[in-house]
Length: 490
Ligand code: URP
Ligand code: ZN
Ligand code: ZN
Ligand code: ZN
Image 1 (cartoon, rainbow, N blue to C red):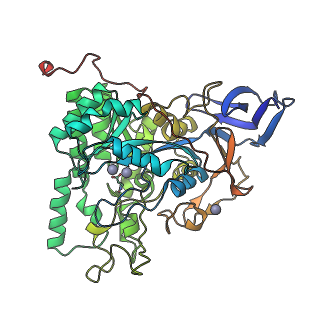
Image 2 (cartoon, rainbow, N blue to C red; image 1 turned 60 degrees about the vertical axis):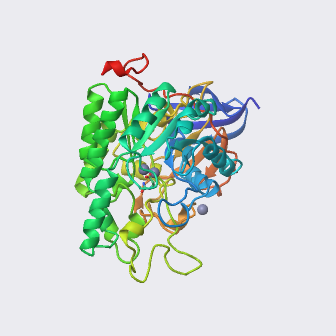
Image 3 (cartoon, rainbow, N blue to C red; image 1 turned 90 degrees about the horizontal axis):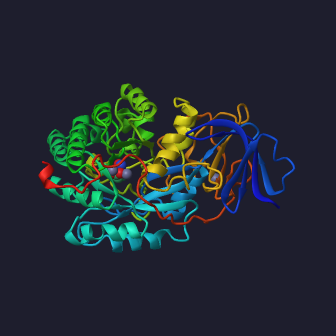
């Protein structure tokens, strides 16, 4: 056969264009686009009839926690590389960038990287890479940035909160300067950890322990202040940053203002800030605890501003921040963060994070609040550009891009359904979106020309063929000045 795969009768949507085109794939790469019907005499090992459905580059989810140690208490995040990447591919995501978490007692980053490789290799349904979490920017760790780049890693994450990870401002400056020298993108969790600790004590003094008080303990002010501080520090060093999981319009406004000045400040938001509210933390029994994440879901009246940020470019990417924990402890038969003293959980002991790697694309597609090209831009293309895998990923360019595709149902083909956790493929017993009405779901997911997800033809039909991606530097706008950073500038 001339081709390995043909996708015919689809409407191809990329960040650039929407067109009725047939797609030909050979050796895992998109090799040809042709007007609808023009390839009807070509031979292919397999042909998929998209029946008028949208054909998009596969999703790139650049914020996923797999097999990570809990930041307080015992245990680790629930999904392994196998279950997390399985969940991703069943939801239309073909590339994951997960985290390789250094801890404060570790001096080096390279051990962390090697340990994370060992967890992932041979276990992934998607292609994958890692961001290094820098918890201890020791002289040795900073000296390893060139080695990270040589190993295909071009991004890292730092934290302004969580005792186990929080960096002081001078440590942040150390990381940013070394990141600048090595063309590494720094992701920043921007919440003021001391404000959160102070608020937690205030709530405890008042015996306010319920999960809903997690939201009170993480006020928008703590996020806004840290966001503005992160922008100030990165502007001082003149280096691009990405503020992760932005939840509040007040933080988004500071980001927008920086972008309008031409600064390379990028930002991410997540479905939990579009679909959940702080009231979800007040669901009965243990259901509220399952929606605890940081920053917390905000007010319903904030959602529209977050959608608008996705439309106007304030938010570069829409990621999942998939970080679920299993709350049932099989040994004790109790919830792992529940004690006799705190029967529905003390908010400060509830592990932070929600599942979402499988529902990210379908939720946003079903809601239909983003133009199609905008949807592709924030769920795929921009992540590929920012993290240095474009146009291999995040695009469908002839002869260049991997044949990673998500194919949606044509109008009228899929019956609207109520989402149930049992439909999902993660290793968790809940989804915060239980019962939500879904108008779309990926019909097929294709990784480098192989159909891995076929919703009506067996579901998960592919194997663990995911490969590690060596990444280069960001191709989005970088430092304003190209010369070396110099103290004398200030
Ligand atoms: O609540 C969250 N987001 N948990 C995951 C860890 C993080 O900060 O992204
Ligand atoms: Zn974070
Ligand atoms: Zn996260
Ligand atoms: Zn299934």
